[in-house]
Image 1 (cartoon, rainbow, N blue to C red):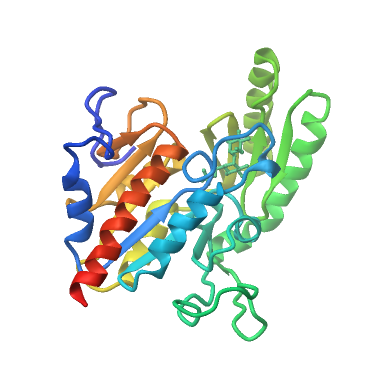
Image 2 (image 1 turned 45 degrees about the horizontal axis):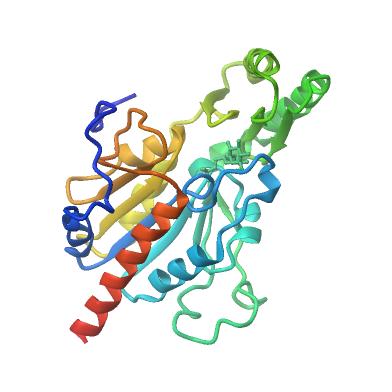
Length: 297
Ligand SMILES: O=P(O)(O)OC[C@H]1O[C@H](O[C@H]2O[C@H](CO)[C@@H](O)[C@H](O)[C@H]2O)[C@H](O)[C@@H](O)[C@@H]1O
């Protein structure tokens, strides 16, 4: 871990606490707000089957309110692929996938405030994911690694390999503990052998992930998004897992990081319990932003 604002397990205030009004006022103090929100475990509750993860309807509504505010940009910054995210998030917000390695900007500018009943990717407005060039070059190795893992891990019950083109994920959430342990060990062996130092590994929430060994992660993706916003933009990052720490470490003094879930060590200043408390916080933020918009005119 490099730099950042690591804190011990105690002393992370919840941004929903009554006396935490400063969180909202910090986020509102700039000319623009960029909300970078993780998907699994942050917006969508964790479920055993990754294919079943969904955005609760109330959360989608809150995101829509934020997205509609002219001085707010919403981005989903996830470990999933952008095409997977696109099937789960109807709102035309920016999607950053594979832990920052790819991005899909949907035609939000021309849909803001207009009738959004049609498909979000019209033929005229459809855009393609932009992929980090070094990650694109690593696709054959990632695919080879995923294929080898499929074979090696096939005998293990309740273990699954999710191949996402630019990265891969081995899931063991529902595997018995000894199987999970063996799964982690075999995965590390395969990634080291097939990866030949060109792939890197990270351990997340009941998963092991592998991807190209390049210096680019969620923090860089957040920085890039920030650079495209008006000067002085405040940034909110909400996330629940290992790679979100990279995004928290990219934050500055007048930004806000919220770690979701257990009291683990984090570079975020705040902690909240679950996707439902994230929604409550975003709801409060959306309320304050609409009033700001109305007040200013
Ligand atoms: O960055 P995120 O949006 O949090 O994505 C991280 C990984 O999330 C998914 O796995 C996690 O959620 C699953 C569904 O709730 C759960 O079954 C799994 O145990 C979690 O680790 C997703 O499947 C991965 O591709 C993402 O990288």
